[in-house]
Length: 222
Image (cartoon, rainbow, N blue to C red; front, side, top):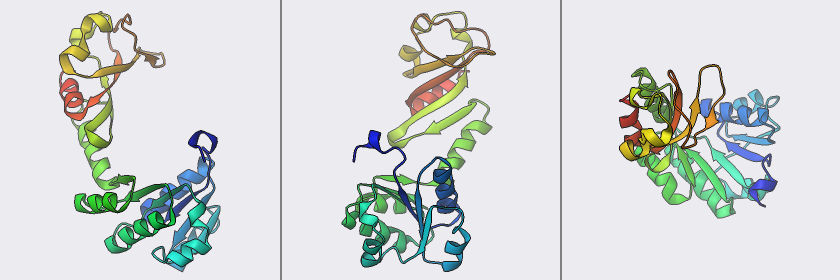
């Protein structure tokens, strides 16, 4: 099934703890049908009226997942974190069932490597990712910051003094810092796509993208 034909396709979330449960509810609000699975019946009952479907199951049990039709899902999210063995075995089971897109939560760098090795296409570390983001915001150099896989980041930051009054072509920020200016925001206006002829006004905010180290170095100049 092509992604562009199934933006609101059903998603299974395994492990309805703090991370998995919150994520499942957010997906439901975004219009997805969500099947929430957890081995704790009390947790399942807690989400019975909040998700499309819920079930109590051991997610490492291949036969149980087959009976629930998990092999028909295009995307699965493994929110199990504290029990590393269960987390890894769940990913393995989903992979064996042929689920094409598996997301998984990791609680450490080593856990993340194992999950990737056994078949998780996307591994997230919520606590680590959020701590890193907040650290960048606390410094006051960035207004917002998101770091992606493979050392790539996007940041919202104030325009450096050297660029004020110049066009982006004249400022040559990409040549100097190795970053790409994606958008420019003027006071009282919405963000606009950055064009070479766009002039950077006083007090402007820029959306920049690039290698994490280069984005951090650029933000330090603002």
